[in-house]
Amino acid sequence: MANISTRFFGLNLSSPVIAASCSMTGHVDQILKLAEAGAGAIVLKSIFEEEIYHELQEELSLRSEMHSDPEYLDYFDYVIKEENIRKYVRLIAQVKMATKVPVVASINCISSGDWVLFARKIEEAGADALELNMYAYPDVYKSGENEEQFYFDTINKVLQVVSIPVTIKISHYFSNLTGIVQRLSQTGIAGITIFNRFYNQDIDVQSQTVVTADVFSSPCDYILPLRWTGLLSGVTSCELAATTGVHSTETALKFLLAGASAVQIASVLYKEGPSAITRINQGISDWMDEKGFGKLADFKGTLSRSSSSEQAWERVQFMKYFGEKAF
Ligand SMILES: Cc1cc2nc3c(=O)[nH]c(=O)nc-3n(C[C@H](O)[C@H](O)[C@H](O)COP(=O)(O)O)c2cc1C
Image 1 (cartoon, rainbow, N blue to C red):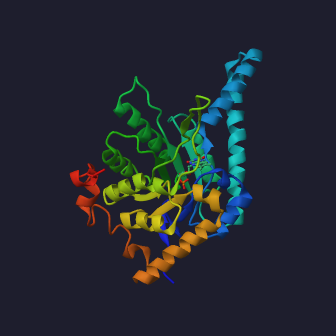
Image 2: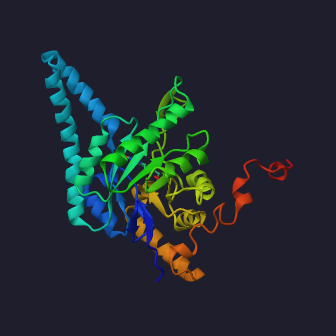
Image 3: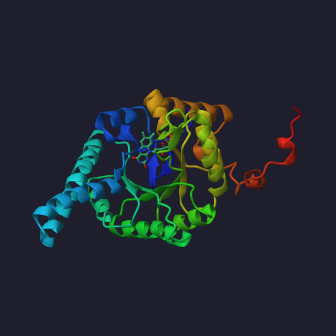
């Protein structure tokens, strides 16, 4: 049987199929099922910086009616953050006691503020690595450089307080994706995962209201991260992983061929349950046996732009003959 072990999060993983951060990875019993199914690592449900600050603000406005003493408010600030982090720390410790599969904590960050101190607590709780799910809200008053600086500031602050490997998960909303990903990969992080899937809006034309779009990805959503995996692999100083739209063995293999070290999956776990991981692992192993590959390194990245397929990946515009059709 082929060896499907890989490296991501600065760690050796038994499989390239990672359970991505989602509600399923926020509960010990479900996490253990994902581990038993063969996940290479589990990324815990994110602790949201926004959530922490929101909770904090509500509490502070209540308390400030009773207390105007800044020292008291400062103390309260600390207590509320402690409560949030305590729940998260407990989850990490429980999961670490129950499984040997690497456990990756996740922080959803939108600023490089004082939440960074949480990162140290996460490390102390025993997390094997930390993923920063990063997104800078577009701001008409900020330049692109300003927006990008947030990523570097946050990473630098976190790397100063922890010694566990730190990775980031980003979106594709950058003006020069190749340039920024390359520079981010040189900051000392252990990996970059492309691209996060966000909460999306849709419009109901009957009620004429803005509604929630489908929360889950569909199998064809892999095309965008696949293109960028192919383009970025070989350009970065750290490992790449891919997320969004990985529902099948075939898609997972495409990402590995394009140069990803691992794939992170969420939607298919909701649709199929943890057995999706077993199915994809088995499929990768069977395909490798069939093709005569003993380990992932034998084929990983062989179809990336830097390895062989430069022209194929760089084509953006449709050639004339693709669009011609007689009606
Ligand atoms: C219900 C749900 C909740 C999610 N929550 C988080 C989260 O808390 N933090 C995070 O970084 N990503 C979160 N994600 C994104 C996933 O980790 C994953 O990167 C994304 O869904 C793309 O993978 P998929 O196509 O397999 O769903 C969530 C996704 C789903 C579907």
